[in-house]
Length: 257
Image 1 (cartoon, rainbow, N blue to C red):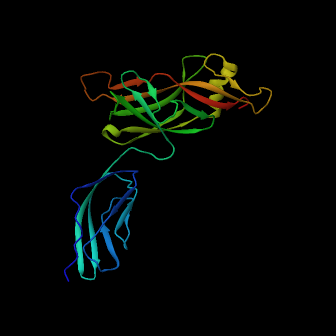
Image 2 (tube, rainbow, N blue to C red):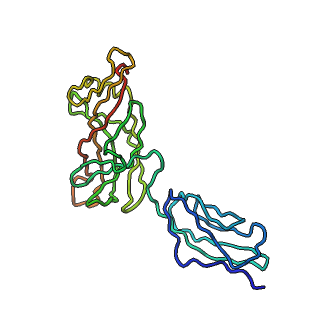
Image 3 (cartoon, one colour):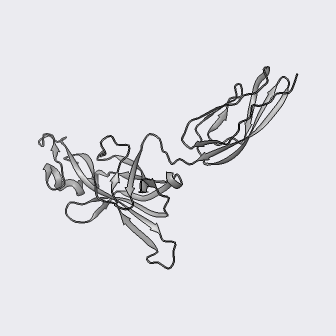
């Protein structure tokens, strides 16, 4: 009987982080032993089923992985080098809110929102995935600072609701910046307190105001602010600051909070 041969793959296997992978390895050997499959240097997040040769899982780390598949059957052992290319997709599952900011106009859109609006309640945490676009394409810019602010009613001041922390996810035309925003009830009380009843920027969609648990829905005017490093030393300043257009967030909060 001839030694087994693992069926070759003709190209690099390319996947994204956060994307479920299922790749079935196969061999010419029709009489495999128990648990004949193994693999060395699989991308983090992927495993191989020793009994079937199914490689599956969700890759977690971008990179190029030179993996070696091994099959041990009743007629001998076969190996096959195979390359996995894992691209950082910048995709965060479940709770990430994609935000697009147009570099030319500063317009803010929420591409995955059914009606294009953002809704939240006082006390919520919002995980934003902020991308900067030009001609509809995400840009990979040298962002050094990112903030989310709400316009205060009484003045032109901005109430900063982010803590300054952010991280880059994705590269090239998949680049987004992940940041966490906390709608702090104490801060919202100060910023939105004058807007109950529909005054100025408030929608004032109000339940019974005599009820201590009464709820009002307000249109909070918000913006993103970016800082980007300037690499050309002949230009000043060394840091460029850009703000998005003001955009509405519908915020629900209790009257007595």
